[in-house]
Amino acid sequence: MSQTDTAVNGTASRLRNRWNATDLGLIAVFAALVAGSAMVPGIAANVFGVPITFQTLAVMLTGLMLGPGRGFAAVGLYTLLGLAGLPIFSQGRSGLGILAGPSAGYIIAFPIAAAVVGWLATVVIRRTTRTRALWFFASAMVTSIAVVHTLGVAGIALNTKASLGEAFLADLIFYPGDVIKNILAAVIAVALHRAFPDVLVRRVKRINN
Image 1 (cartoon, rainbow, N blue to C red):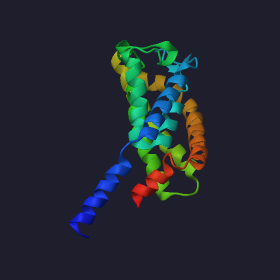
Image 2 (image 1 turned 30 degrees about the vertical axis):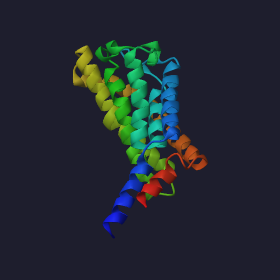
Image 3 (image 1 turned 60 degrees about the horizontal axis):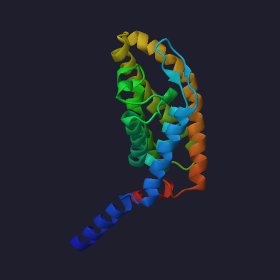
Image 4 (image 1 turned 30 degrees about the horizontal axis):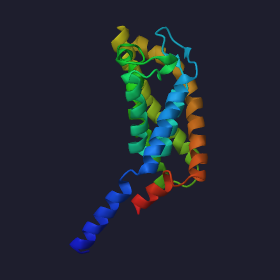
C-alpha cells in the first residue's frame, strides 16, 4: 500500500469517527433521558438516604445504545448540568454540594459507567449475533458492580465517615433493583438496535472493517 493510500484511509477513518449533527442530537436526547429518569420520585433505601431511582437504567441504556464516546458525553453532559445548578439530580437536587453527600460516588460513576458499558457493547456487537441481550445484560451487571457500586460505596464511606463495611452493606440493597433494571436496559437496547441499526451496530461494523 502506498503512502497516499495510507493517508486517504487514515483521513476516511477520522471522518467516520467524527461526530456529526445526528451524533450531537443523540447525545442531547440521551442526556435528557437520564435527566427525565431522575425526575421519577426515588425511594430512600438505606440509612444514608441514597435513593433508588431509574437513573442507572437510563445510564446503562445510554451506553449500550451510543457506545463509549457518545455515551460518556451524554451522561457527562447531564452530570455537568446538574452540578452547574439545574435541578436534574434525583429528588430535584443540584449544585456542587451534592459532591459532599452520600450520593456523590454514584453521580461521579454515571459517566464512567456509560463509557465502560458502551465499550463492552461494541465488543458484544463485533463478536456476537445471537443471545446479544444476554451479553448486554452481563456487560451492564459487570459495569454496575465494578464502577457504580464501587464508587458509590467509596462515596458513602468518604462523605458520611462510615466504615467501608457499613457502606458496602448499605449499598447491597440496590442490587436486586439493578438486576431488574439491567435486564430491561439489555432488552430495550437489543430492540432499539434492531429498529435503528445506524445508531451503533453499523457504525461498529464499519470501523471494524
